[in-house]
Length: 126
Image 1 (cartoon, rainbow, N blue to C red):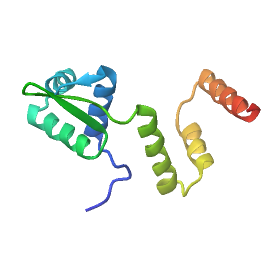
Image 2 (tube, rainbow, N blue to C red):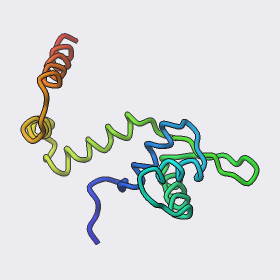
Image 3 (cartoon, rainbow, N blue to C red):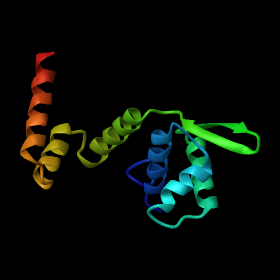
Image 4 (cartoon, rainbow, N blue to C red):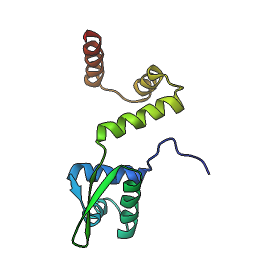
């Protein structure tokens, strides 16, 4: 079995985004949002949310018979950890190689390039 480059699968990330957007969410609420794009079983969403709790990304409390989930980790922390892992595993620790790949491989608008330049300039000024 091949090990994933990230500790989170696509469905897990999708569910995390829904929980982050809602603040607190039940399995039914998350499933309802996913149903806008595709079919998914209630039990599938429930299992993934339990797994995210076990991995430390979500936490929950019981409200009667319902589990209400919320994020244990902020989006920025997850994004930072995933990008750091990607840089280490794919780009041998080179942040500049990642940025070069992004800039060369994507259709970046002039506005986005200016934002990147401004970000770099402000980092240098600090």
